[in-house]
Image (cartoon, rainbow over all chains, first blue to last red; front, side, top):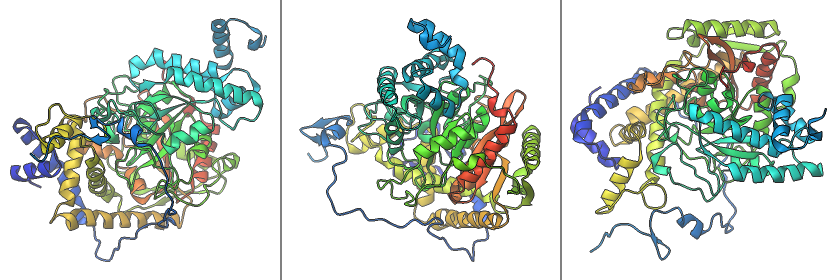
Length: 95
Length: 504
């Protein structure tokens, strides 16, 4: 199983991760090893197999149409790295 | 002289520790002692907080200790006990894996990403225990975002195995297992996505159970792979685990996969004999790759079960070999989606001086996540990306069906399945951390259980080179009472669960 450096960079981009140039070779090697393991799946005979959603008697529940206040906004925003006037603050997007 | 008649708190505590050996008492004995007022919850809590202070520097099993809060809760528990109307387990201390949200306290998930995160609410599991009056003692170390089998990926440093300090305790719930083995608490919570309760329980010589998927609420339990994640207890014995699970498992409307039916009675079956119970040994679990010492210990344990009247037969789980490959598609795929929420905006780590939004996301995640977490996010992204979905994700889901069918065929002939929990006893730090695939194979016997959503547990069944060996017991859906029963009957006639590492 081989992945190109191009694919590694694309994967990093999609994952919103940054891989330093000096680390690219190691990341590539280790990903290839894991994908070689995962490729053993191709040996599975699954022509007549279907995916069943669940084995226990789960049913998709709907919650009642009632407003519930779980945690208040101030408590939630206390966890944020940066807030301003009740809003989450991010770097400027529009000039 | 009854210790209660002594005055002076220090002397009194020392005597009560000596008289009652609090660290070795079972949950039911602690419960009884608290009700009899042999000692108070405050004394019990102080005792375990002192043990954490004394031994954690050697083990690194606990990340946060709730000293003052724990003692305040213990005072309230004592008041409740004094009224005579306290619920069972009221006043008993418990450690929580740092994956469960604890209101007003740090909840780090073993990651730099959440190193300063103070949760604004309690996980349902924490809530269930606190409502019953158990005392939250603190939070245990773990592999970062529960991704690991050795507790070496934690941002807060490796956990050491109390049986051999140069060895790993297993993972991802390595802190919880090591804490129970070193008797830093009588009970701990843990989670299991691919073996993270059972494998560390095995390597540390303690008892742990992962119940049927949907038994324990996932609300407030930080998500790794949501279709596989399941909480459960780690403790000294099967009886302790049964009592803890009774409190821990509940229907929760806030968890969309919580089972609505009433939970089975985990406790009352414990004391019944296992005469005639049919146990299957999967031939695939006793083949190449299994350490001969581990194999011998498990075989000896099976002889004990035979002696108790269990009927042993061989079964086959022919698709077992697909479980690790299927898991390493499904779990990273779900993880890549679940971990996309860590972007430096609403909570958790944020990189310094981001130049734009993309830079904020990318640097926050690259600086905040460790190497293993980043690897799994990338594997998941790869398996879910356009052109690869059918070859990987769909194929893994089909393989999972084959694994489920294997178990159902086996359970048409036997009541329970038994085998080793992991291929070998605890290994030395650093020996597998450079080879992810070798590390992933640590969970070769445990992963299939998660993929099928079945309950599984590990109990100590021997020592190899002075390191513990675990025996895995697998049941059909909601058959935890039978698993706990076999484990309890085994522990009634053996002493492996009583073995403690020398220095603790």
